[in-house]
Image 1: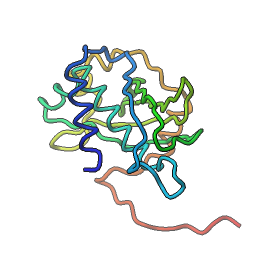
Image 2: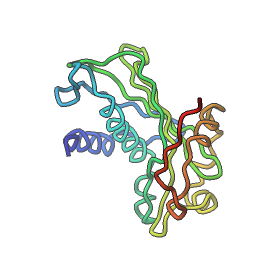
Image 3: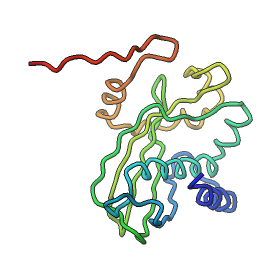
Image 4: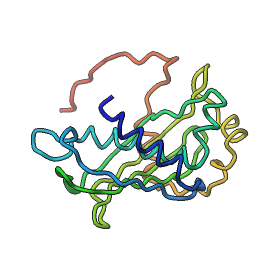
Length: 186
């Protein structure tokens, strides 16, 4: 709940702003608050991940995807993500969070987030998401049928992101995934 007021602000601003196409880049202005800081007095690495939720919310509201997936009883969930921190954001820094939909493959959708201050990228993240319904993860055909505008976007997904997403994949919740540690190679 620490981001409730920010979420409310993003929600209200998105509702009053002009609609966007799924090909558009979502941009929201943010400011580093005391609650965002870690003991080293820069924005905490986990805060970046939470702020990304706000970028995806703005994107889904302004493109109309939010209303559509809610009507269908679906959710958009993060399956995997990777982030690179280039420079630190500190107390009072104003920055933009840019969010761009990169496309879909046969299982997932892909999003890129950029934390930008004064025109320079401070952090960049790639997110692999899935749509889920009451019975679990949705198949590609269901998503294409209901969200055809998202499926029709030419894929902008870098090859390395697709390779990483596959390498970082774990078994589904229907398969066992025991907590077994393996010894390091000698």
